[in-house]
Image (cartoon, rainbow over all chains, first blue to last red; front, top):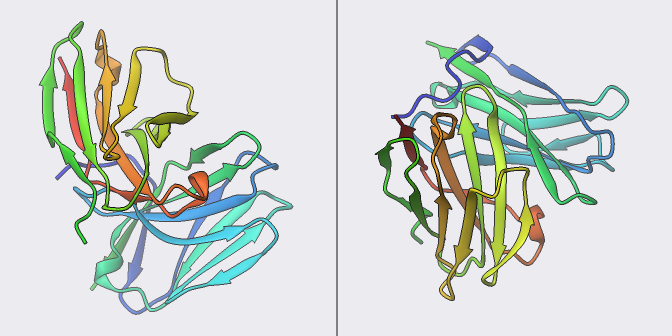
Length: 112
Length: 115
């Protein structure tokens, strides 16, 4: 399949441990944020989103934290599994400009 | 329900040529967005179509164009190809009623190589 981001930062995590993936966003006016997962040979897949009026949102095994003061977003994956191995990237959306800006991504490797 | 499909999956063209990529959205989805993904620039938004009209546009030159048909299928065209156009082109569909805030479902992409 296609390789996405050959020189991405890599996070290696032991199976069963928690993973934290970070993202710095660029626009203080952005009001909607999404985390995507992209496996090799596939398109991005929505994981979780958060609006700027929140600072935390939880899904199934995933939590997104938003710190607007420092323009930082993080994705926490609990009890990381081999199937979580993929590239993860964040996206910020600014309603006033109707534009998405995507982060370059982090490769998560789950070690058995 | 079938997912987003894109054709062709792989394409090789030479500089100066033009190319047309096709995207079939999930049934019932009226919005189709196109993205370019490269290792250096990551994912970049090209444009979005809704009800056969371009609703949003990214910062790409006019060589990149698209259209949407009445059945919501969309095509993207790149004219006068340049080496830098080599990329994975992704299409995403959504219901469209919430604009780009609707959850987007991505296809597997078309890998374009320009020689």
